[in-house]
Length: 217
Image (tube, rainbow, N blue to C red; front, side, top):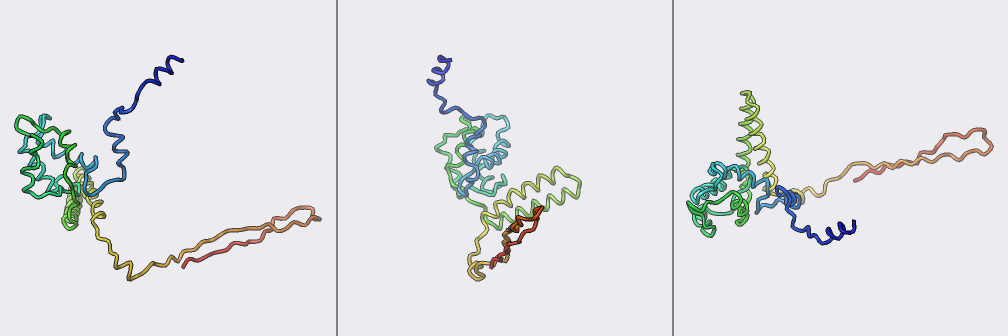
């Protein structure tokens, strides 16, 4: 036992890999920002990437530029687009050294997705996309295509969450109307047992109700 204890005391367990980026996802939970992609959003981008990387060997520079233009049109349905102009796509991958021979793998592209800034899609475009997906979902539902209907509804709901992020805050409305009145009640129940008669044969169960009710204004 002593030899075993000494053995484990000498071991260094720092840097042990966690499968499938589980720890990173856990640390980033609830920290989604407008200018970066989180892991589930990167997975949406992966769907576009694999349409070009059919042999799982990587994509060429031309294909990489086309994927970026798909992201600029938000064809991956994540509610965010690269904060870039279309002409910037032509030269942005030059430092990567991607050629027809030196292909870009998904892992290289995934790790580089946040080397540029992102921005939320504008509200009008998002709202139209949400409405279109809900309309398609209803159409497929009426045609009995439940799987396609569910897929369209999922896309609509995913984008609908982004609408709340880019919804303008109406500060004037709060100023005009002031703080709304509550109007609810708080009741405090209090029962005190009546003092017992020491000469009585049996105790009684009588009590005084001292409860009070407060109305918030």
